[in-house]
Length: 193
Length: 144
Image 1 (cartoon, helix red, strand yellow):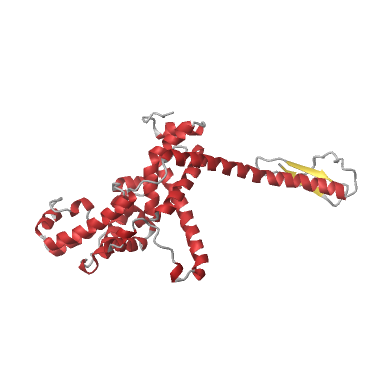
Image 2 (cartoon, chains in turn yellow, cyan; image 1 turned 90 degrees about the horizontal axis):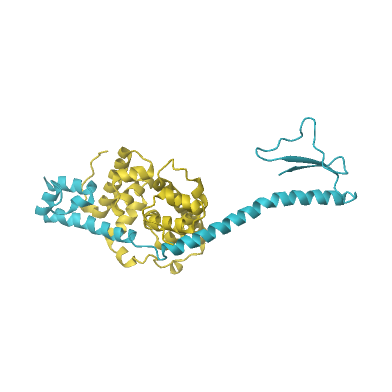
């Protein structure tokens, strides 16, 4: 059964809560691309991202009844996604700590990222390293605007931040990442917001 | 605009501004300065690679992911219910064991509600029953 694409998120949520499988599926179809991009931005690992997306969907199914519409659905879902990504990161760190004493250089896993070829590109590697060094909020704002096409005002709503704070995070993150990309060619940075 | 000014802007401008002929005044400078244009090109190229990665769709289709999530969620819910039943069953088992071990007949002594000051307060939303055993030193408190 195809659920009407004109239905609002709230309608789909209501249907899903009433046990309508098609309602839940339509909600997933609508939000999956965005959710997947969010997770990729948070983890930068496509394999792990897919697992996290699956976990977010399980949590979504279990918690859908708790969505009261006090926040935007996008903000609520983003928070759910963020928590699942954080849990995954924590698990990965624990696993890496456990594995560290056992792992010699010859056992180091090959790059799992299918974009490994592109990653060799020096500037992309610099982007990754610079982003990894950013505070979490700055990294989130930067990734959403720069790589996922959100407007800063949309990001502010999604992350529950003021527009001014969002712009300040974006400014600092851009300056740090682009200065890293340009290396010696970057000008000395001026202290602005 | 000098190259220094342009490069300061390169660090913080929107990506759309980093193309020659883009919004003034940076776009105009980039159109006329090959060095700054090359730097802007590097920033743009790196951004496009990451953008393409973000746009990669998940391997599994939404329908399959949704179905799998529904199944996993239900299994998780069932498992949770099982775990919440464990304390009640354990309490019942303790009552039976105490009655049998004491040598009294395995017919339970009828539960007696404590009428005076209650020995224990029931947690919010739950009930509490107090059972006496054949051994006056042992009283079983059961919340359910």
